[in-house]
Image (cartoon, rainbow, N blue to C red; front, side, top):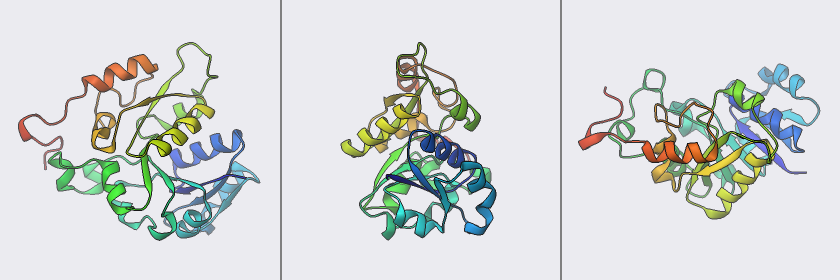
Length: 221
């Protein structure tokens, strides 16, 4: 049975885990506080879920979702994720994460930072721009009108293909924003971040996105 591991078991992590179980996956959950603090999450998810440390979850999983405060990305296990597809749902909140100069100066992307941290993994940006309650309730069959689209971005074709297939399985269309270098187009406060959009509408919003102009940072210190 295919297992998805979760580094971070908050609202997005637990919601994706529930959706994954619903389409036939096993899940292994972890957080920064240890598996003993996840009893409630595991009870809610049912018998196809288990709890572990972050390193154990990474090692046991076939695929992984990272959904942690961005400031904690350096704590994501590295060796255990080598060769694996890693979905990245992180967002940059300077008030929470502290200022990260490379992001403030438009020299990096949030998912690009995780990819640098995980040089032997295939990082794909996913699930960062949808409210967790909407993620859990707005999935539709593939032939439904106005099916909501979620955005991915990544540098590995096969990894992008797998993540796109998984997102389709749980009820959403997919728009590929391109490589990780272009994943800023769906970071916080861009036109596509938040609203319920079809694939056609989301594609237009990605094209409308504007990064800092004339070297001005998106986030001012």
